[in-house]
Each structure stands twice: as C-alpha cells, then as structure tokens.
Length: 299
Image (cartoon, rainbow, N blue to C red; front, side, top):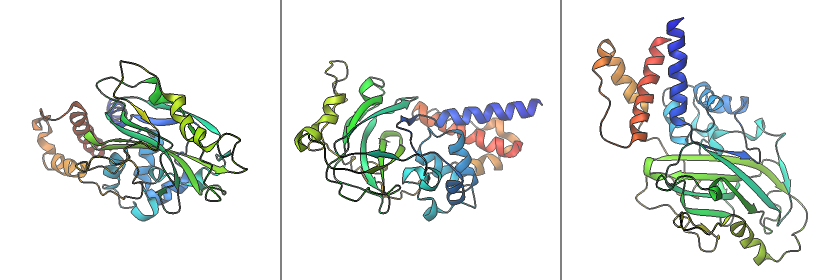
C-alpha cells in the first residue's frame, strides 16, 4: 500500500510539472480513441490526464513507446487530437461573427501567442492571425486578463474552405521559445452564410479592440492587429515559428536518455544530483524525468 501511494503521488507531481495552458471556451478538441490509435497508449494517457501539457513533453513521452506513429499522430496539428473524436463538438459561425475565448494558464512562461484559422488538410494558417501577442504570459509581469479573456472575429474571406466540419480549426498557439515549450488548443468550426453588414475594415480590427487594455503595468504585452503583427519567432529559437504549424519538429532532447542513466545507476540512485544550473522550469523537468524512470521501475 505504501509503495502504491508513493507511486500515485509521484505520478501526480510529474503531471503538475508539465501542466500550464489550455483553452476552456469555446470547447476545444479533446483526446479520444482515434488519437490513442494514432499516437499510442502513453501519449494518449499523458494527454488524457494532463491536456494542459506542452508538445515537446508529448514528444519526450513518445520517444519511450513503440506504438507511436509520427505520421498518423501529426502531433503538431492540434497536439494529435483528432476530429474523429470531436465530431459532436463543431461550432457554426458566420463571417464577421465575434468569438469569445477563455484560456486557463496555470503558470506563466514568456513567449508569443496567436489565434489563427488553420486548414487541417494542409496544416497551414489561412491568412493572417486573428489576434497576436508579441509578449505573452510574461514571467516578469504575470498573466494578464487580456491574455486569458479575449475575442476574435471570423474572417469574411474564407469562402468554402471551412464549410465542412473538420476542415478548419481556430488554433490557439502559445510558443514559449525561451524554455522550448509550445502549448496548443484547437476549436473545430464551420462557416456559413454571408459576411456581416459591418465593413471589412471594422471586422479586421474588432478583435484587437475587444481585448486591448490600456495599462502602464503591462506595456510590453501588446496585442497587435494582423497587419502589424510580427508573426515569426526569432530565428535563433529552436521552437517552431508562431505560425508554422506545419513544421514537424523532432525532439532534440528526451527523458529517455535520463531514464537510461538512472537505470544504469539504479543501485545508487541517491547519488544522482539535481542540476544546479538552468531555470527552475528546467530543474523541475529534470526531476520529472527522474520520477518517470523511478515510476517505471516501481511498476
């Protein structure tokens, strides 16, 4: 009993280390059996228990399993979550309609973010971002209201690209390149009807107007219109660009290497020292990797 309780406690800690952000409204895609079949048991279990986690951690989990199919999972598109699991969760919007978003962020990580229309068949962004933050969830200022409660406007020039469920998603994309962590949520939708009576110029600026909060305490966290947004992440970043959802980034580091090291020294695990350099997030990730290895041996 004591061992079982300890294992469960460690599993909870591992989950908490990686849980940081997810859209809660509109209802986004969730993991299901189709995702499990494509991405494998461990990746599915990881997301079923912690959908707030980042994509890089999912890739680390995938590195330890034999049933992960990178092509079928397509992990950079909606974190591998499948339309087949979410057919009953498709919103119907009209061009020019304003959509309110609520994002739950558990911990800040300075980065950039946007919400864009993504065509799922090609995993590409249609047009410009509907909204963009040049600084998002800053560790210096903390998470601000306009980063978790905001609105976007459905474009009036999508034509028939998003006429059928599964064709398009509204993708929330938060790229914390400084710690190489990317968070993503997808909302399935269709567009029907004609453009609203509002002028196209009004529609193109309504989302920014809806979320902008003039304040002197968070001047860096600007919300830009699509016309002025710098949509590309710094060239030095190892993470995908804020718009490049079609990039299938390979994991550069995996906890598998850590697990091997722990396995080799399992008889003297107490001698493994926690690294003293790096950020607190990196240290927690190291601890999570160690705990994951210990959990493997405990089972």
